[in-house]
Length: 484
Ligand code: HEM
Image (cartoon, protein in one colour):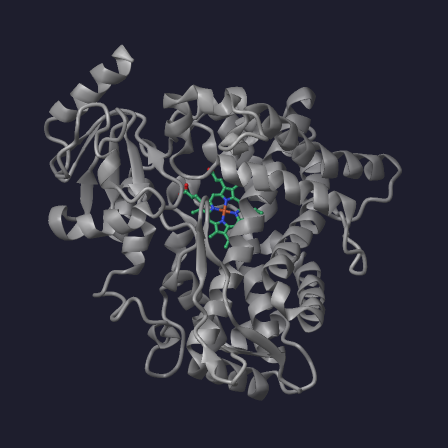
């Protein structure tokens, strides 16, 4: 408690830091921030304090960056100082989260992770898996035809089965509803997603008793013993299955097998297995919900902007033709569909405050003091709301990504995948999965407002879930085959 008080007073007195709201002792600015959607408060602060805002929280120096240029200055140009993460020892020590690349500090273990994950997920090698992504997209279309109202489950299955096959060569049976590996990994990942929600590191560090609340008791969802068991299941189940297949010589091509072979001579054996297992466990955790959430945003946009949907469908009809679904060879011939994809990522970024970085050393930026250990939050939401770059930013307008000739402009909204050395290594895989799913859905279905008993259209009225990702989980809409 004394350390926390001392830290809190130090924050109050912090001199030379960027402007920001007046912090209270101990709490800092915690009470002034929207607890579930902090990006909204941070974006409001932009008008009062500017693009860089100092807002210590529970004794943790915190700096919010509201502009893309400043984020690039810090995370890209000064990456040697701004690639660290905040201390997450409460998660690594008690929740079994030590495996997770995204919460590791800027240290040798993280470097080994990046080396392994980046080589497998670079733009070109990842194209080998396009056929898997296409097959999974066809399975998604089949499921949407059968039970269109279960679209969230289908999107999660699409992204989960794609990652399991690309990473572990686990081919979930298209006809098996309850693929046991998929089920175990996906259920376990739900716990990880919950524990990693923004604010939990600080919450659990300040109130350690939260991790001891039994699962059956209200508030027990952060129980650490349960989480540890779930993490182990998530990491071991697909990995051990693949090892068995490798031993018997009947594993297909996948990222884990490639990595074990490629790095066999470079990383000491005892470390190699752990690194590969952990890195690709992170890939599932980081990729499943983010990709599925992006598809939810896409569906919501199509319900609300039918004219956009029509234009995208007529581009597909004229370039791909009727009678077959789009594939990756069509990508470059469908600029409007690509613009819809970029606008989906911009309109509601699924990770609205990215994953905060931390400063390894103190620094001076734009004349402001940046304390050592400060958490730097890239407020991606504010970047997508930049009205100079994106006029009428809350409207869904794919045209903003096209020039007068109808060609794509250079802005591909890359910042939604983060910055600098920490940029999302799964972005090429994620983009291809989401694009092919979107293009196939547009080719196959009309997405419309639901109708009430009298046939009048019903507003979608989405219910948003804000955790590690932010997306609408249920809303009224009809997904109807175009051929009907
Ligand atoms: C639409 C889908 C996705 C979005 C929006 C997304 C976004 C992000 C963001 C914002 C970060 C933090 C970057 C930073 O710290 O600056 C991140 C990190 C990461 N992502 Fe993704 N991601 C997606 C899909 C994926 C997929 C499919 C994979 C793997 C197959 C993946 C693997 C990772 C990993 C391993 C990290 C940690 C990087 C590090 O800390 O060094 N992501 N992602």
